[in-house]
Amino acid sequence: MSPSRWKLTLYEPATKTASDALARNLAKSGLRATLRLPEPANPARLPYGRLPYSTMFVSLGNGKTPDEAAVVQAVEVVVRDLRARFGRAALDLNGRLFGALPEPH
Image 1 (cartoon, rainbow, N blue to C red):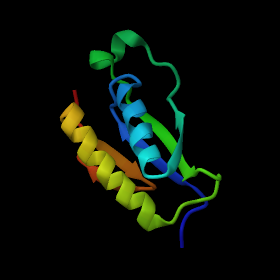
Image 2 (cartoon, rainbow, N blue to C red; image 1 turned 120 degrees about the horizontal axis):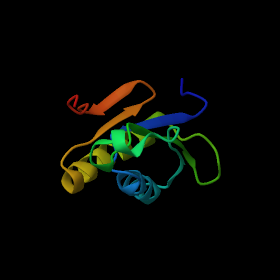
Image 3 (cartoon, helix red, strand yellow; image 1 turned 180 degrees about the vertical axis):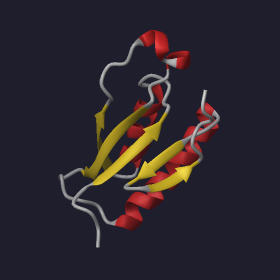
Image 4 (tube, rainbow, N blue to C red; image 1 turned 90 degrees about the vertical axis):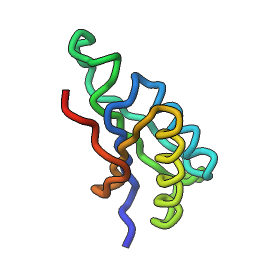
């Protein structure tokens, strides 16, 4: 049984850059992503301009909920691309972790 919508959390994205790359890669798979950023954090406490996380809600272009297989396949492709571009990636898809969480600072 699929959830009513897919929630995808990207941990420690470089401020907006990695989130934009994530959305573009999901779009290549035919998925639409709506970005939600956390409440504004104190920039002095953000290491290297990174946010603690960003969240996207994933749907099909027509607004319907995609099936699990399509979302998981897209997420696996995105993780590989983000690792190639940024050196690491950790994505949480409705409680299922893809990649590794960043080391604590």
